[in-house]
Length: 67
Image: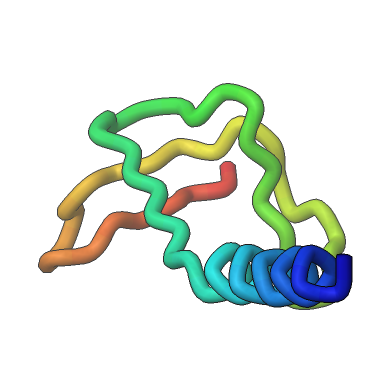
C-alpha cells in the first residue's frame, strides 16, 4: 500500500509539473473582427470588446485595434 501511495504522489507531481510548464500557443489566421474577445489592460480592466486585428500590418507582428 505504501508503494501505491508513493507512486500516486509522484504521478500527481509529474502531471502537475508537466501541465504548468506546457506552452500555450494561440494563432488567429484572419484579418477582421475577433468576435467574443475582450482586450484587457495590465490591471485586468476591459479596454474593448470584439477588436479588429491585422496580421502583418506593418512588419512581422500582428496588431489589435480597439476602436
